[in-house]
Image (cartoon, rainbow, N blue to C red):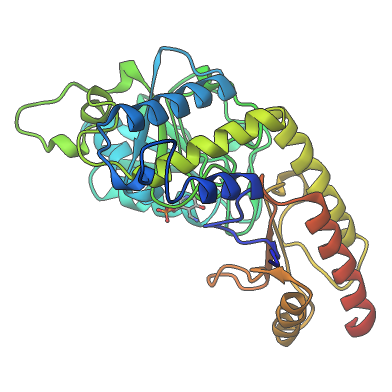
Amino acid sequence: MNRAFNFAAGPAALPDEVLQIAQRELMVYGDLGHSIMEMSHRSSTFIEVAEHSEATLRKLLGINDDFHVLFMHGGATMQFALIPLNLATPNTSAEYAITGYWSKRACKEAQRIRTAHAVTETDTYIAPESSWDRVDNSSYLYFTSNETLRGVQFHEFPSPEHTPLVCDMTSDFLTRPVDVSNFGLIYAGAQKNAGIAGVTIVIVRKELCRPLESNELHFLNYQTHAQYDSMYNTPSTFAWYVSGLYFDWIVKEGGVEVMQQRAAQKSEVLYRVIDGSNFYQSPVAKEHRSVQNVTFYLPDERQHHHFLKEASNANLKNLEGHREVGGIRASLYNAVTQEGVDTLCDFMQDFENRHG
Ligand code: PMP
């Protein structure tokens, strides 16, 4: 079997060990006589899986009892709607730090139902927080810790002083330690660093969850999902199970601190190749470059096609940039190995020697 070096931006590479366990348990889970996918989410077996995954996640990030941990449907995109619906009141404003494509989309969605104010708007760098156009009495300050599309990352989070922080951590969740107690809400689609598509993890401060009102749509209120332990309706059981395996794997590897060290090493060698050449160009300000999504351009648009084709032949897969911005994007998520990145760097140097 040939497993390629996979730099997909998401759904993304999974650790071999996670896939191997899932494979081993695919037909028959334990002594049940069938798989985990083929049974009630309310069975004691699945509840054990669910409780174990939540407990492991709480340990990994040090999430205390002030927070609900939810395993929801609807992707990160559903949170673009649920956050303003649940956390912004009709009479106040919500603040959005737009640092790329995803935070812009989140802000636009919020503006459909609430007053959402962009405090900053950039694309390839992050303006200093002191320059942001803040408003009084905002319900929350929303930001995207890692903008997946261009690879723009907050290496320091905004100050939690004035208003609850709400963060889309979809593309750097579980890649570094985070002091969760500084946040009102953190959410992440699992399909990059924490599992497969189909489950979105929401960590929300209990006191921010509004009680259910009789005339509102129950499914759209966080309180409903908290009250029913994320089982108000049938959850994505298999995706939830895979996230549990992924969390176990991170624990086994040494925790989020180890994921952080690895990401630093992987991205450093790759940026060194980019910065050491006149051929590859990074579009992002150095101090805000992502250690998760490394994007770059070749001098001539036509060369991207050759690069991707040759890379694929060299077993380096899924390197094409997002359709909005083109170019090349190498995503270096938790499951991407140093060996994969070193192979990519060698390939890039060789490609440059031949085409530069
Ligand atoms: N936020 C970020 C930072 C993302 O990278 C993505 C997906 N690439 C999304 C939100 C949207 O996720 P989904 O497709 O799961 O709704």
